[in-house]
Length: 533
Ligand code: GLC
Image (cartoon, rainbow, N blue to C red; front, side, top):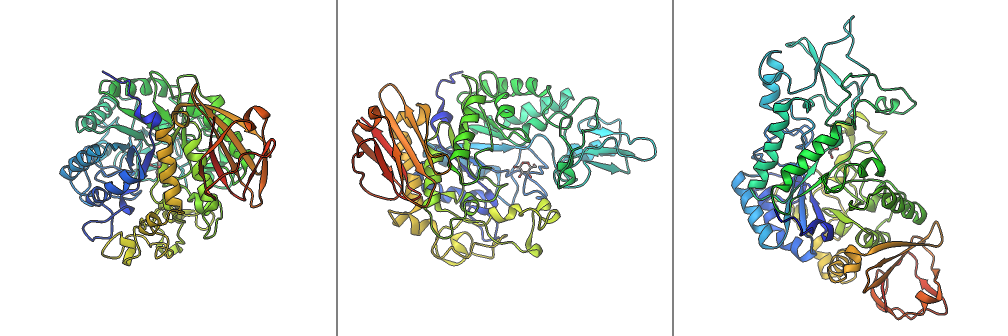
């Protein structure tokens, strides 16, 4: 198969949280037809692919990350026919479609689990992780759940415990069972046969657990989950073989892409699964977890670069459906200067940028009172940790009721700033955050150096100033970002300062003077992208 077109290296990927993107049938929940209606918007923004958070049939206890049928579409979102239309319409605009595959666990309502729990000698009995308790009615071991409490749930019928790293209605599949594994590979083929271009693998490095089910060592921490070192319940060596098999299966189709959500590991942990014969990419959330600090961001990029082998390509992420939105993390008030600077970082550093719906218009987290929390860990850990609902509010399309998202009350509150912070208003405003995203995406397409060029950090003021070059043999592009509120001077060697500076983009001004001596002055929170000739 011809896999030479590595669109995912050059491309920009946009994550859609389907419940919250656009509601076409007025039930308050986003759907596939809603997405189809807004493909023109995405084409204009310039994204190369959309990643859909799960749209499979599901009881929705974890908003679709609890799947009850891997090869269907939940009626809430539409039908398989709608899905085929989405693929066709997206492809006609040169937008690829990436599905979210949640293969570590299913819903407890999946027919496989219903069978599995019905007896210990049916064909599916070993498709989930079942263990006997320890003498005295104790749990099989000390493993804890990320959603809170223990990770073992006792099932009266089987007289055994089943394992769940997430909610207790999300039992974990047993990847050591060869039939289960083959069923998983069939799911990949099913969607590729429907012309899906790639997959995002939910918590993929969680597929295997220690074969001997040893206790995790204890440590200090806030939640039960943090009070142990997770060495036996995640990221086991057997994952290597599964990753290789997934790559073989997807390589049998042209130009497919697989990105894994690495769970509980840093850049080095993610990097070991990436490259030739392994996944095309994996997430590293270090940048997302960095405060607004130039040195910390630059160090995070460098650690990612250092961790990656020659054949691995980085991913760049500032937002997703599990984390507080960057515009709220960076405490920008109503001002978007920091968000514009962050956009420059995301879209000019080396790697595949991932955008999360609404990031391009600077949507903020909403306030969710306890009575309105729908996210299970959000409820459990209130008010210790913010609920994930807060970053999943309806897309702000325009200033009409419900922000143009739906004709009726949406499933989650719309941010009260929608009358002035919305896509329609920002499209018309040349100075808006939306237009910075759009220009940056276009610049990446025009300048190979921004897509494929070497990344060369130039370190200046650790807290406030970050600068780097992106370079191919024909082009040298300088990116400089002032993280501080005050103007700052960027000093360069005479080799760089002596070149002609062609401004490609500034987040704060139209024109740039040539450097004075060896220095160029950046305005507060300004980011510059300059072509050096
Ligand atoms: C991933 C998803 C998250 C979900 C969890 C369990 O981390 O991103 O939303 O709750 O997996 O499926």
